[in-house]
Length: 206
Image (cartoon, rainbow, N blue to C red; front, side, top):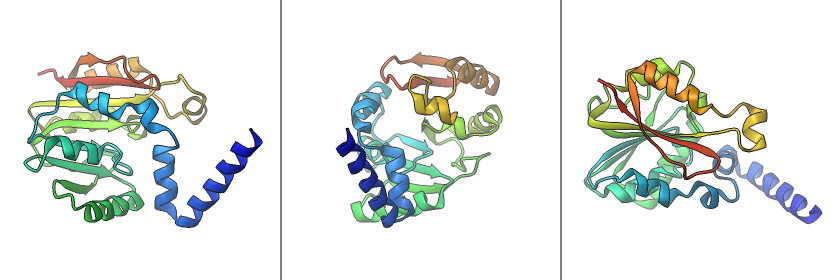
């Protein structure tokens, strides 16, 4: 146990030495995100078509962004939206290094993701919902960004583990449902896949 603690401390010090982007990337992804996040299964459930346009709101280090980019193919488009300048710079560098041509970095703000009107087939968020301040107003504004078959996908931390409870980084499922209904949406899917997160899919109710 002591050796694991020591190793973790060493790694954290190394990450701090590498700068903000490395530190924040670790904060987003941790040691074992693939095992609990089940990204391939999440994406498969969304049945994303080739050529689709997606917005990854709160894209962070691009954990889902670049996976989406592969799924939609060269005829599709991914808008990687974030408010953190360090992460936006990191994403821009990753896009260049990987030679990805279908990802566009967008600096959103807490009131508006700044997306093109009428183009977004899926607006996706993972562990971002609790950071948005006036969520009903935010997603009401998103209605104009969605395509005619547009959906909003929310993966949001629940209170099943200690960190979200202590940090307040979670939202009850009932709260999400009420706020999204107030913003003009209806729930169409509630997937029981990821133990640490609610996995909810909404579409406009009008």
